[in-house]
Amino acid sequence: MTITPTVDGSRLLRRLAQFASIGATPGGGVNRQALSIEDRKARRLLADLAGARGFLVYQDAAANLFIQRPGRQPDLAPLLIGSHLDSQPGGGKYDGALGTLSAFEVLEALDDAGVTTERTVEVVAWTNEEGSRFSPGCMGSMAFVAASLPDEWLDMTGADGAPFSAELSATLAALPDAELRPLGHAVSAYVELHIEQGPILERSGVAIGIVTAVQGTKWLDICFTGEAAHAGTTPLQYRRDPMAAAVQAIAALQASVMQGDALARLTVGRIAVEPGSINVIAREVRLTVDIRHPEADKLQAMLQVVNAHCAAAAEGQGCTVTLTERFDMPPGRFDEGVIEAISEACRSCGITSMPMVSGAFHDALFLARVAPSAMIFVPCRDGISHNEAEFVPDENVILGATALLHSTVRLSAARASGKGFSQIWATDAGPC
Ligand code: GLV
Ligand code: MN
Ligand code: MN
Image (cartoon, rainbow, N blue to C red; front, side, top):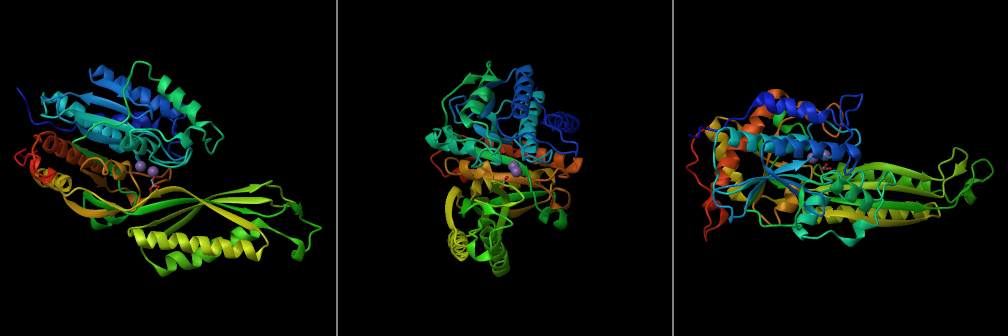
């Protein structure tokens, strides 16, 4: 006999706490950066939980981790649900973990209720969504949709100097029992649950955001080069100071880009100075710039503005500057059929929802290139994220997982059809 599947809220909250203890920081957050020992421990725990339930666990060459619960028609492409387990260096307990563990809760809830879905349902934990240790972000989903690992990643070193290839191999080796399968496979649809990471839902008093689009992001590495010289003996006219150039460029960008366009975002998140000595004029200053905009042409125009201000500042200080684009994720829209399925799932459970655009990038934006995709957002306190203080009230955790469960029930009932995806998911999935 099957019963209506229900999220086990206390199990999910317990799991969140258990994973938050892996890489826990004294400030109450997590430091579980991509491919680190802590990341490997979290993957090990998830694989063990899956094994204990009898679910198949496998990984691919990008160390994306999959957990499979077979459907009635195993030949149909699976429905994929999940997120990531890696964190920012001083990250919160929910960014990524909430979506991954809620997806796993969905598999358990289906299992507990004895529901056999039509399609196989797979949970995924993508590798390196954050991009702070190894850049770019979304490496796992990017490699999955391209069905290969770009060669240039293999020689990369991380922000901590660790070689990417060795860390990737060690992460794969940490799950010797998980079968290694080829990168990239057919997916019928992808749904990712995530915290909103901004204040809109909380301020609106709405339980769920249904993400219709994601704004575009570009990451730039900028290097100002001058000449190292003595801090005390070098008069102004003899200095070629890259620090002065960098400061001037940053000030000019702060005064122009976001002031002129309320939708534009510009962040300088990291600065490194060589040789980095109190009494030496720097030889080199490297900085990262993250720019975002919902419109692709405006994002491109922002890149030109960054270029122009950096060139002018470098010239003014007798320095040179190079700008390297590390990551280019154009804005993208999600699939109307999947959006409608999530919206129906919320309606059927009496959960309030509203459409919204994501200011953060997500693996779902890459998945949307190969499969109908959309996202479910839950509110977080004061909109704070990428911060140890990130917090999601328990009731929002449970509502989010419930919305994901009922979206999964609808989308996994889809039968193969010549029609567009919006027409093929079952509308008769019933109430919660
Ligand atoms: C994701 O972590 C982002 O920076 O948007
Ligand atoms: Mn995230
Ligand atoms: Mn993040």
